[in-house]
Image (tube, rainbow, N blue to C red; front, side, top):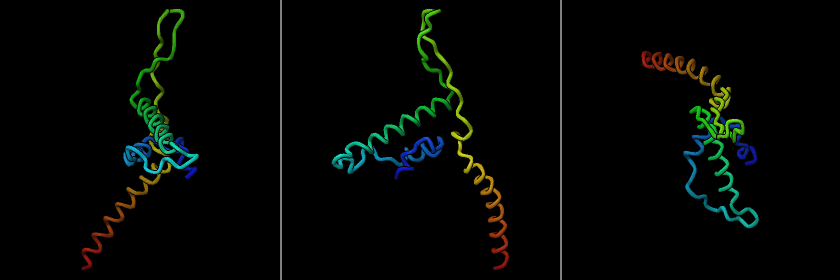
Length: 115
């Protein structure tokens, strides 16, 4: 369970998938001495995911006060790194999957002609 708590290890696709599967409210989140841990974890996931989505959308955020111009400063967020867009392990796996799929198609056609 500890590694599941390390949200920084997940890319935006994985976090979206996890979020899509989460319940609105966790059951059994009231264990004595550990009340609210699941809700706290979910809040962290949502905050991280919102940040990634903001970066992916190249949103502009308030970055403080500009005393020289006497106004608020805004900056465009840096784009997500390629590893946060999609973990390198999946990119390699996707390439293999495309090759595997073409082989699977070949084996299906061979099997069908042998019948």
